[in-house]
Length: 117
Image (cartoon, rainbow, N blue to C red; front, side, top):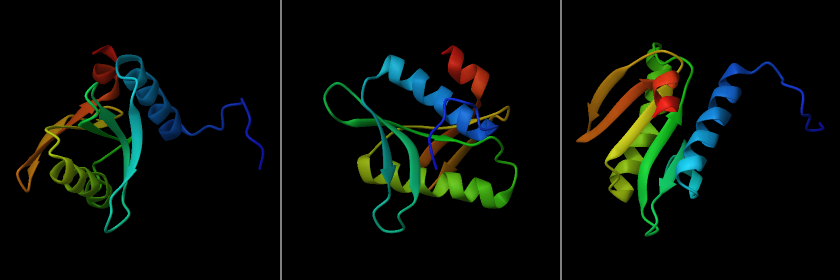
């Protein structure tokens, strides 16, 4: 399959790309991460100027389904515990919530608010 500059219609992929561009404009070191044991994806880890992971970011259009919520939270919790990251965010299309799991705080924020900050 060839890559194309034509939009493929995936709103979730477009949202993830917008969030990446936003993060990259503020921090030049933005990485993708897979957890060690379960090989779960963390969309982005922001690394500070000293080389320390400082923020995890997941991107999900909708986290109202329990399965989706678990799929997004689990790798953030694992990664935040492993690296000692305190700022953990799930960027959604329009949902806002806060979670405290295993001593790790995670905020779900709507994309428009995230992109304005």
